[in-house]
Length: 345
Image (cartoon, helix red, strand yellow):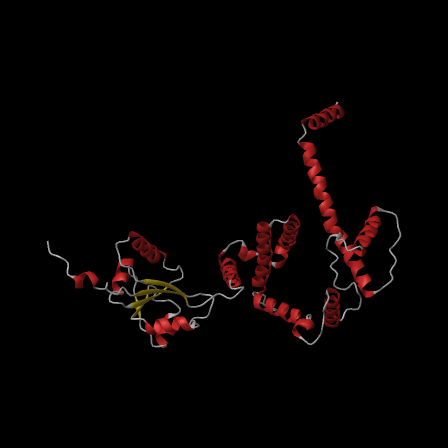
């Protein structure tokens, strides 16, 4: 047996190098990379990318970085780092799961001297970035789906109403998962209508026009945030809003802009709110009938700060629960069946 020399026992292990997995967001313009990413790319001994059509490659090469189109295995990538070399892998949209799984497997085996591994995000999504995905998906659906490609504003109108009511129900029920889903369904209606509007031959507009319009409106109606006005209470904010809105719309009546197609209680409460805000003294019409009784109740509710529609829905849900409890009582069911049979006889 050969004895191991002291020099061999203390010899340092060979440098294993470094692997940098560089990820980018397709929602950020190609070439807009972080400074640490550019540093890693310029300092690398080798830069690899499996996708020869990767949108970042023209910008990397323009910056003087040589990029090899290659898709190495985990073992090959470790070998490429031998001698302390640094290899940067420009990840594709999928994030190179096969490569990362292979590296994890080798690291877990304990039989391989692993290079240093680093995940380096080169660009980050800004808040709202997934809205770009929604616009792209909607564009493809509009072009390729036999049903979606035939839809019109009028044809989709009923879905907008349904989704709005489902959103309100999710809010009132306090279901967070349902709320998130219903907000998505309402957002879909906005994007769908905007996509249809792009095809109008006379007055086309896009989702960017829709977003731009509401941004301008919000800035203009919040002078206490974006301008020199001051508002310290919700009431002062509302005054700013109503004042700027009146200037924008140039309406002749406080009732202008109130949609008459909304549910009756909500319509009555909205009219009462306009009257109260304008400081008008308008007596309620006096006449016989349930409609006028409901009108008076809606006006009273609005004056007390109660949403009559929400109040009625809450009462209706309580009534629904009472109905279901009654239906689950066997003796009640039997009595109902007997009464029905007696009437038939």
